[in-house]
Amino acid sequence: MAKHQFQTEIKQLLDLMIHSLYSNKDIFLRELISNASDAIDKLKLLTIRDDKYRDIEFQPRIEIRIDKESKKLVISDNGIGMNDEDLVENLGTIAKSGTKAFIEQLSGDNKKDSQLIGQFGVGFYSSFMVAEKVEVLTKKAGEDRAFKWISSGDGEYEIIESVKEGHGTEITLFVRPEAEQYLSELTIEDIVKKYSNHISFPIFLEKEVYETDETDEEKKETKKVKKFEQINKASALWTRNKSEISDEEYREFYKGIAHSSEEPLFWIHTRVEGTLDYTTLFYIPKKAPIDLYRADWESGLKLYINRVFISDGEKELLPTYLRFVRGIIDSSDLPLNVSREILQNNRILEKIKTSSVKKILSELAKLAKKDSEKYQIFYKEFGNTIKEGLYNDYANRDKILDLLRFKSLEKDDISLKEYKEGMKEEQKEIYYILGEDENLLKNSPILEKFKAKGFNVLILDQEVDAIVFPMVPEYDKTPLKNVIDVKFDDEEVEEKEEYQELLEKLKNIYGDEVKEVRISTSLTDSPACIVPDKDDQNFAMAQIMKQMGQLDNLPEIKPILEINPKHQLLEKIAKSEDSELVEDVAKLILDEAKLFNGDEIKNSVEFIQRMNRVILKAL
Image 1 (cartoon, rainbow, N blue to C red):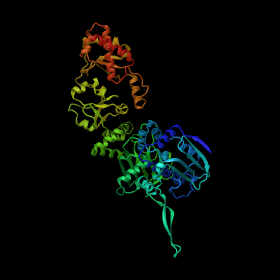
Image 2 (cartoon, helix red, strand yellow):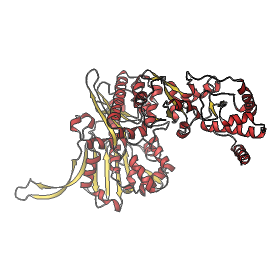
Image 3 (cartoon, rainbow, N blue to C red):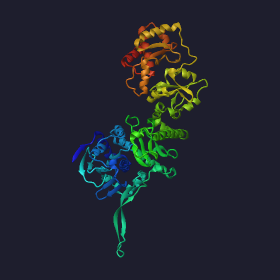
Image 4 (cartoon, rainbow, N blue to C red):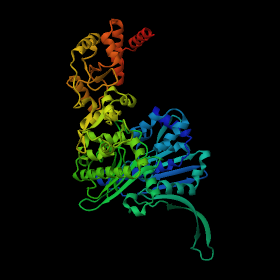
């Protein structure tokens, strides 16, 4: 007998399951049946691909048995099974990034954390919502030894060598007194029909039925016997005609493959016949997957060939910016023994991928037109992810641009099409400003000339915007321009002699803090603004690092300060003889310009002291 300690994160998860306040505990059965189906899928694939397993013949099936006297619920399958190493890896530690992300979301507040269960299925561990003890008896296909895993969810588990006929896994739940409704045949059958009807392998429930002995004509006896009855349809849902599938069936299928208790936002079911034969069933979730922005995100797509499961987690099936899509791709044109390496460079899959991307983007565009409220739900969750496609999917850039929605000076939730339709006759470009704070951007001094001319400006305040939009030159033949690159025809740099003395005075005060001080042609109300020097080597390097997503440790760029010499503050500085006051006010003007630019003030103590001195003199 070998005792093991659960990984710390598993202990947290088990504690949540045991003390869960989550109302829909039925999902434990859906999760266990889903795992059983996966185990059968894996063995079926190995019997095709691996010589070691080719001689194994089996009729896939999942069985559920109820023992009311012992208060036990048993779920078994004849899939791949596990050995002792698999048990430790699969049931004692967390390997899947989605589960890791789930653990990281836990707050310690059971009521709050229970709601997370609804957003993300937690597989095997959900058993402990209804069981005070769980035993897993398993034997790996092709191996002689069987093992039993035992735990009460109390921080440790044990693995002992055991005996089992045939390969597969049998999970025994010792049901808690408060969960005895799960010892009812009717309850179990209802749950299976609701959540697992789509499972493509037969699910049998052992039922108590009355049978009459017909062998003795004179003395016919009726007695109670136990018999297995199939309780699911056992047909792959995506292979059926759309007209035969109810919305409820689509929703429940999604919950099973996405391990979620939430309904999807919508789905796209496509069957293609001709040069290529394939079926896809894609779902758009209502909520972003927990691991959406993790480097180790997991694909929510399963690949089948003629209804035979091939793989899940293949990141190449759709581009990265569509990683939130869940669903199925089933092709008839690939060989069953195709390897993962071949899949990654397969022409047939590449064509399916290309068509699938166009279909998904097309359906999103339709949704945006016919149901703006539902599209807003989608865009709130996945708008930033969709933007990533501008960086690496040039072929679909126009379609992606049409899907984007922006904040702007005039209105929020505006499309580029709407922006263009609202452009003034003399406006020849689409203008945008990049930064991190919406309020600062909308009030940036750089926009004063645009506001004066009545030109709308898009407010791009998301991290991804700074990476992708410098790479988008135009939309519908209209140039996209960062406001810092815009020079209007009526702008002339003022080179009046009277301002040279002011410029020199400020340059002496700022010293190495700024690269240059110059007269602005765009400011109307503010005293100064920061503009980047695009010829600065550090600026070019910072842009490259942003495009690579390396936003930490960007090289320092000395700012150029543009001033509005007609502003009262600058006029006072030009005339004042109080050198200490002039220095304080000049440095406050620079700090103000930095703040509007979204930069930090490095020495806040000096800033406060400077501000106090100026206030005292003003009083």
